[in-house]
Amino acid sequence: MAQDGSPVGLYRAFPAGREPELINGAVPPAVPILELGCGAGRITHELTALGHHVVAVDQSAEMLAHVRTGTPVHADIEVLALTERFPAVVLASYLVNTIVPGQRDAFLNTCHRHVTDGGVVLVQRTSPAWAAALKAGHTVRSDRMVVTITEARLEAGVLHAAQECRQGDTTWTHAWTDVVYSNREFEDVVAESGFALVRWLDPDQEWAVLQPLPR
Ligand SMILES: C[S@@+](CC[C@H](N)C(=O)[O-])C[C@H]1O[C@@H](n2cnc3c(N)ncnc32)[C@H](O)[C@@H]1O
Image: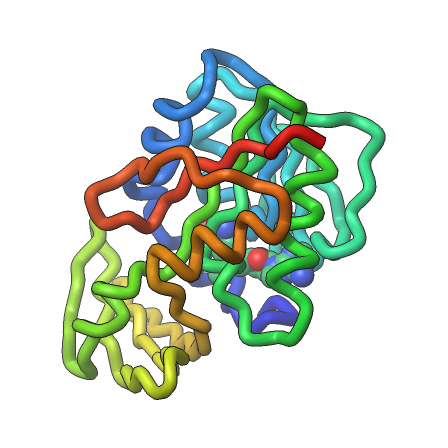
């Protein structure tokens, strides 16, 4: 289990889904990518296969032990200070929706410190429409994984949720809490960290493309 409560086995088994292609389509071919919170390399491995060199950062040594490609870096995102800057930085997995005070801005500041002037930061946030519609009992299949929502409460802009993920004989449970931002709030949040929201990558408006404002 990672410090943030993510089960390692779950993120090893979870299919990569649409994320690698979305990211690949938003960046130039074969660019170095900084991936923050890479987990067990679910997205990292696919980005490598698509031709990118990925510097993959995570605070969980247990997760990082499964990253087979790119350059793994064991670090807290908040204090990351690499000497290199990247044309593409990825902050996936709704880390930007953290409820920990100060952590969201620390994550975005790390993105800002590490992106080149003309580069992009790709952030996956919790969609407010998805959060509002989420109900206990919802079931989604992703390849061989069956995900059932066991708790979903949206109160005062905060989503309290839990899911049960089953593959074959193995079941993982995962609970999380997200601060949910409207589009307007999200634009304001990223602007405070020195970014412009350029566009959404997907119809669900989960994936935002950010560019650093002139420094
Ligand atoms: C839900 S998992 C997702 C992993 C990966 N992005 C994926 O989609 O498969 C979130 C990951 O972010 C990492 N993480 C959370 N907070 C972090 C922090 N402050 N610094 C570094 N890693 C962090 C966790 O250790 C975990 O591996």
